[in-house]
Image 1 (cartoon, rainbow, N blue to C red):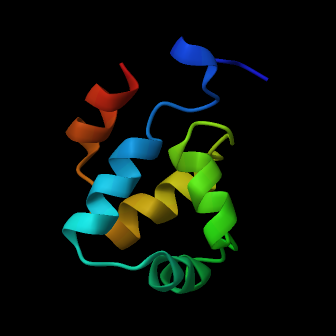
Image 2 (tube, rainbow, N blue to C red):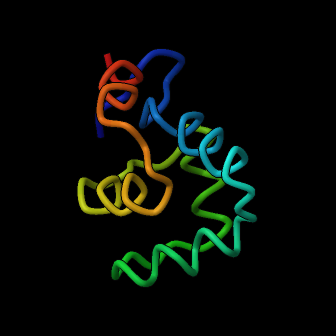
Length: 80
């Protein structure tokens, strides 16, 4: 498993959290919206993603972008 700076497994967990808060989604609501895109994540997994302890798969990332309206350029800059 690839690790990033500070031994994190992903670098966009905080971006997802900020978009979730900006759009007034509670964690449970976000999980329900992700299920509509066939992504089954619970609130514990969201926390682990935010803390960089869990890898975000590509199809999960696409669902997060759709549900939270994450801009590709902002996503790209968070990754770089």
